[in-house]
Length: 104
Image (cartoon, rainbow, N blue to C red; front, top):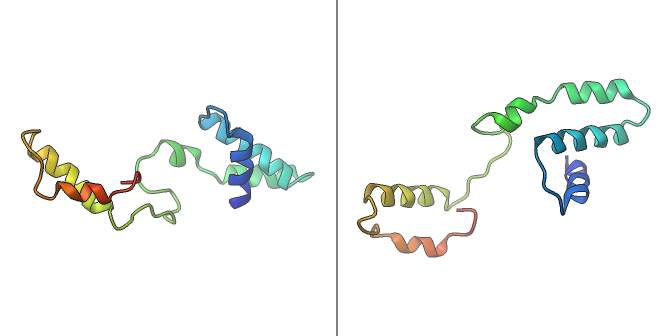
């Protein structure tokens, strides 16, 4: 996977991408990795459910990626507190925002 990510970023570092570019780059990468073995390329490529990876909502289809961190839930709670106050004021703990990173 790391090799593909490196390949993908190198090929697209100044480009605008979409799901079609991802598919094409993965196919090209597999063709390089399995040079002369088109059956292997087709077998690996056929096992990937692009619909689930790109269009479905929720965790990744493998269930192996985890994007949670210590400040994720407090960030969600703070956002919900602002919504509950309907813009009339800030929640009492608004200053926790100052500890957030761009991921939160």
